[in-house]
Length: 102
Image 1 (tube, one colour):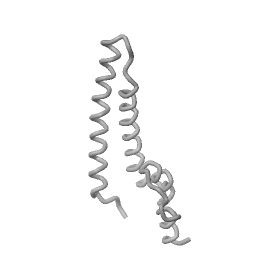
Image 2 (cartoon, rainbow, N blue to C red; image 1 turned 45 degrees about the vertical axis):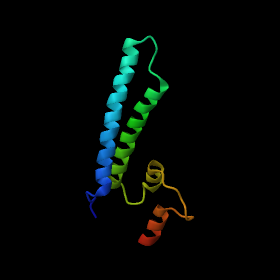
Image 3 (cartoon, rainbow, N blue to C red; image 1 turned 90 degrees about the vertical axis):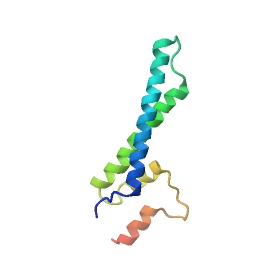
């Protein structure tokens, strides 16, 4: 089963594009603060840089690992990065393992 280029892939590309735009603009503003003023850049600008870098790292993980890792091995990290919760007592990954069998 190959990775279909569907809605999720399009959303990931849009997410990466916006993260790159935010990184560029935030970096520009942080550079202005560091070069033109006596004070360093505000923590809000630094957080924007962190958030865009974290988005790019998580996108890379969510797109690359499922293609090269064994199925089901990356479930817990995928749930952490996507913010999924265990709402019915069992997560989707453990249900998937039960469906596949031993």
